[in-house]
Image 1 (cartoon, rainbow, N blue to C red):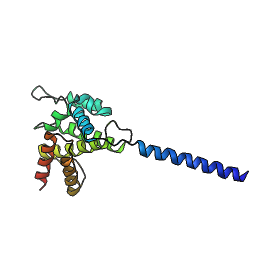
Image 2: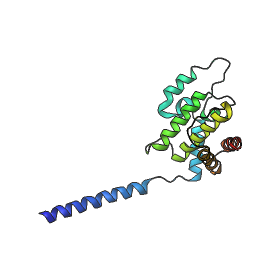
Image 3: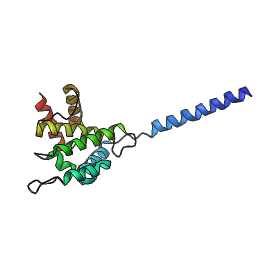
Image 4: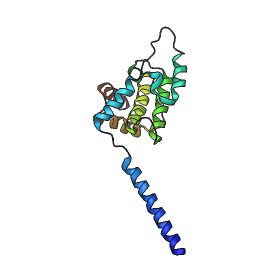
Length: 168
């Protein structure tokens, strides 16, 4: 009987090992053109929807605009705005950070990381605010990484380069 228990235990271990290997193999490796398309979609999505489960907070922030301010329609407009609301940049950073750490996130980690670094760079560039506890060297590496990605659009690449210049 004891020998059977050992065989049963071995077969359970083998099955678990197979499942874990399958999970490793099914982790999606995104192609450059796919990441570019996902980024474009995310930047063009209505701002009220682009930040997923933070959309209620985004909607609340957007109600605070006065008639003199132009409400950013999407994430692309927010990141390229000359005076973007700091609160919306903070929500963008928060959403990206969540997506980066959540295996079931709605965005690939690469896109989440890019949005994270972009929001931090814009806050510093447009408001002079340091919106992260990251060390400057770590932030520089993140901005350089984003700028070097072939799927990053021209606007964001320029923004990341501007962030790097300001840090020098």
